[in-house]
Image (cartoon, rainbow, N blue to C red):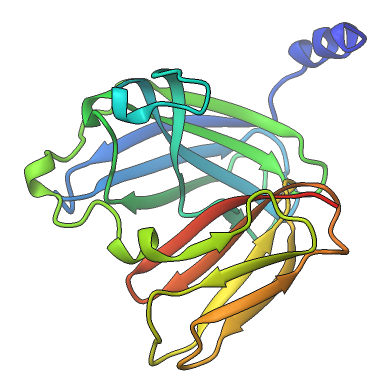
Length: 236
């Protein structure tokens, strides 16, 4: 469409960064361990962000039925590592410098052998994606028998409702905790737009979303058992 010329011009430009390698390792053996190494081809500003996504290339399962009855899905995002905000490089990256990002996750999928890795590097301020790389067949994915806990069970017990939301979002914990739990809400541009925390012993909290713009937001809750990341659609 109208962006055809813009796309053509962009494809002629030299990338400001190269993603050199995406490597998976077996240490520790019960985790999906991902290493992304990249090199700056020119000076990169502060707050360059490295995003790493684990995707399941194909899901064909009756238990994965969608609301429209569909049971076959392609390239489903299973996890953003370490979370939806990615790994932010807080210093200026000088031309020629090489950086490495390491993340780990206890994988959860319909078929572990169908997992793949996507890495992309983005300018946090302009949202321009500098470069992306796809690892279709990781060299190491842990065997299911090695994974002691694919996801913290607590993550499935936390309720966040309603969805979609309008004026408020309710968060309910299955039990009281002996420490405070940070809560963040992040917009589609990766910006933190709200933060609060559950006090010790507090089990429910209501977030006022009446002033939020319509769109998709990510809610993050950090617990001692892991991190809960849920998408919520806010509608005013």
